[in-house]
Amino acid sequence: MDRKLTGKRPTFSSKQPAFNFTRVLILVALIGVGLWFASQVNDPEGKFEPLFLPTPTATRTVDSLVLEGEAYFEAGKIYDPEGKDAIDAYYEVLDRYPDNAQVRAELARLLTYSSALLSTTEERTERLRQARQEIQQAAELAPDDSTVQAIRALVLDWSSTSSAASDEEKQAWLNEAEQAANLAITLDPNNSLALAFYAEVLLDQNQKAQAEEHARLAVKQGPELMDTHRVYGTVLESLGEYRYAIEEFEKAAEINPNLTFLYIRIGVIYRALKVYDTALDYFAKAIAINKSNGVEDPLPYIAIAKTYSRDGEFFIAAVNGEKAIAINPTNADTYGQLGDIYVRARNYEGALPVLKCAVVGCTAEENEVGGVAVQGLDLVNFDVAYYYARYASVLAALSRPEQNYCPEALKIQEDLKAAFGSDPTLMSIVEENEAICYLLEATPSP
Image 1 (cartoon, rainbow, N blue to C red):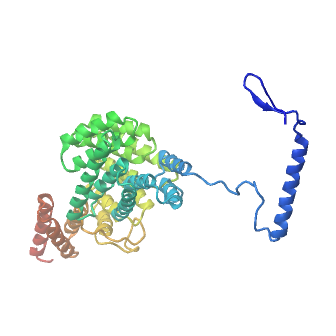
Image 2 (image 1 turned 180 degrees about the vertical axis):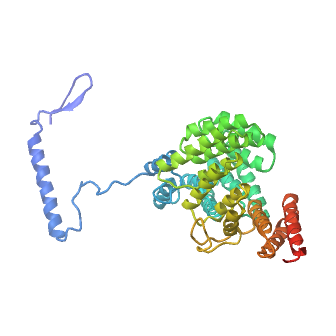
């Protein structure tokens, strides 16, 4: 065959007839028809689908699923018992990609933060248990991931501050949190989350100077992160630097403007400063965000009730406390807080049945506010002990020869002495109540 080299970049050319595209198209069509016919003959039931058809449903990637979870988080829907939220979205990711350590760690972070949105000790305890379970699996999947270890420090540190944990558990979790934070920084000294969460651990170890140093560096290296500003605000608040603490919490809220616990924290600081109107504004912001997300959360109403109570506005304080109970009528802690408001208002008769629900529990018939049965709180922390002392005080104050509540009051105080006998404040209340009851017993009946 005669071939010639032509052109600046020689190619093989030939004098053969030109390429016939029409013939090729006809041949391709005939082949396609033949394949279709063969599939019908060999597969009469149609089990095999023809080639080149699109997949029936598109498979979502891990990135798209994570973005959905982040969108819920940005909207403030970390936890919504009535609808889909960020936690649900991350669980959906893990249903499809169970070995993704980063997603599992992020879920643990959300579970930890969501515990601040729950109103009962039991709910918070269970949520933190779930967070520990997820972060443990994440650490097993990626033990050398700095961010995984940083979030592990966060989860364990918050677990160590749980009121339901024993002293041994608290210390063990705090030690593990410190180890995880140190490992995270060793793996990546520039990890802003690692620095921030280590600062939070140091704060809970009462090493405030070191905590402030690490938190300040975390904000410097990660100014775009809500977590760094939140932690720095927490550290500054502990140091009494309230104005700067508020600034940091506000920066955190600018980054994530729909996280209600940030506004509640700012409001609590203003309340401590006795700037009650501003405190109420921030609590109202939290309520507005919850309403826009369709979330009913009693915590902002309790914060408002406490604020009005401290300002001497007991009637409106009680109204907001009752709103909180209407949202979650089985939460014994809310009854304790409402009872305290009644006591401050000197409404002892109203406080008695409410505090009973909080301390020893009550039936639906006995519950004059919520109308449902309530299980009393276990005497496991100082907050509950305060409710016990309040209840005993009301029982003693209302005791008369014809209606003597002192036997019940003295029984409750024996429990207080057994659990918190070393606390001077509580024991002074116990002594006053005992004096009232002993005086009543010494008074002759009419």
